[in-house]
Length: 183
Image 1 (cartoon, rainbow, N blue to C red):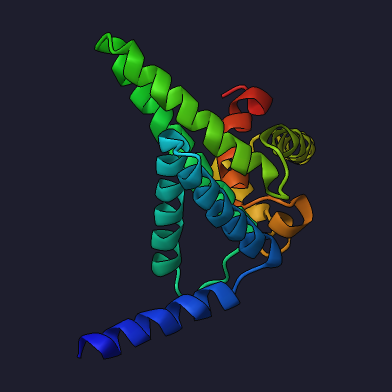
Image 2: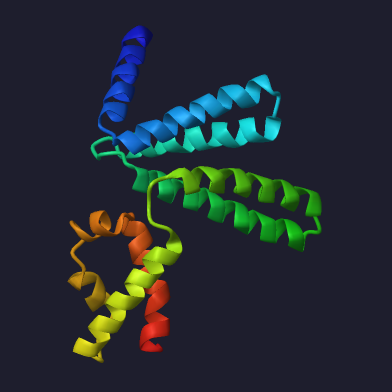
């Protein structure tokens, strides 16, 4: 029984990786190579961060088993982990744990390195495109609401054209909406 379950898990794992973009596969390969290097160099911090990244990526693959895995999903996963660590830094500083905050900052630097290696648009590039889009929409309809904007964006083509995840674009729209519409 256990053997059959393990075989099914192995098949699922191959299917998930087979259903991925080349950039996604290269990023996973790079993480695994760097994990091996950090273990050989006895770099505990980098080893633990990479293990955490691989674990979080595997969990995302399991959650999204029917979907295609791509670099945009990795970008979102890395962003989530960076945000979690930024929250931890704030809490550590409030509790006067500068040593723990410093460790979190080092972990953020490692994750950001992997995030920068992904072939996706930067936050600044997305914000610029969203601002341009919002200004164009404001000219057409000065009373446009945030919910209307989401309905006017073509979510099938825009992420590919802008080289960004839909989640990144959505969060940028929310952030830029106030500056363009002044609400």
